[in-house]
Length: 280
Ligand code: FES
Image (spheres, rainbow, N blue to C red):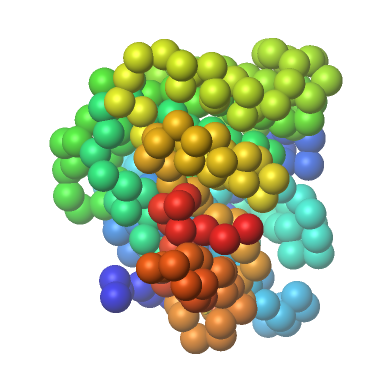
């Protein structure tokens, strides 16, 4: 198992980037130096605050580097305000602290090199794809090793209910990738489901590998779409977690292995799974 560490991390910035969506940077050099795209960290409020007691998982969005040296000094997360902890997170100001531990999970290193990558995100599911797309296009690197398995083409299909919920689109648009936006109400991009846009991209020539992150109905539709077409597909699952390192079994997900259904801990064996194994 990969080594992880606990740090008291100082907030560098914390600001809204879309409706109910915030972006926060935390100074945590040990974590920033090792975390890879698709991995996550656990975060708990500091300064003796025990309510809420449990930590929550947050996917890596990006690593903060010092302009002068390029040294990794912190991590950025993008979070949706959905409950007590995330509401309290919005109140953290620069200089205040939170407890973080990581890096955790297998990350997108579980996915073999692909010539044509189709990333499909719904809701807040675009969050882990920034670092992944930046690395596979050679724009940024993460962790100690310099990765060289670049993709020839990366497409992000990103869907939300309405335009005000789309977050960090400018960042993705600056990468050398194709960005396809979808909204339920047509207020940005094309009107309709993000999986419909994904299906159209799969009609184009390419050795596609599909990676999905988002709400379960979207992931299930993606699993079926890729299964019918025989396209390799991986899913980054969002499930509740309490410890993040395999001790509490709060994150068990059913998987089909060799014809039988078994359970895997999402924090250890995931969050990235081969879609053909996931049981919804
Ligand atoms: Fe505790 Fe996975 S979160 S075992």
